Length: 140
Image 1 (cartoon, one colour):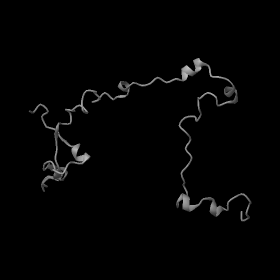
Image 2 (cartoon, one colour):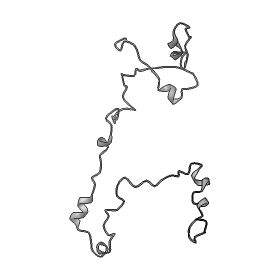
Image 3 (spheres, helix red, strand yellow):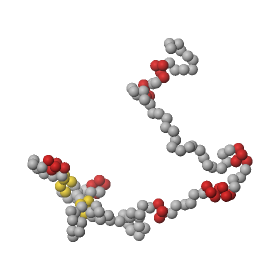
């Protein structure tokens, strides 16, 4: 097919490498997860000429969701300043963690860290999320 056909791209330009990359696989078309359409009244000419029946309009109404129904039930108490303390993660905040002294006889010692205390400059969100969990949860 060496002849140029009006209205068609030449084969060397049909898959543009600048847009598709070297492999030629471009982003494909993904159909919608659900049918695209509207359930609104008045989209067709017939509906535009008439009024929507009140009973049909009421069936389309969605009730308002109360705040209590949306909550996850964890720490969403209205009379507190924040989340409820979770006793499963510990309540003592850890400080800065540094590599523990490595033991040549123990290969897992490179996976341990030591707490060297809380930094006076303030903790990042990641550091503040680390808590000390005691071995004995009933330890005073």
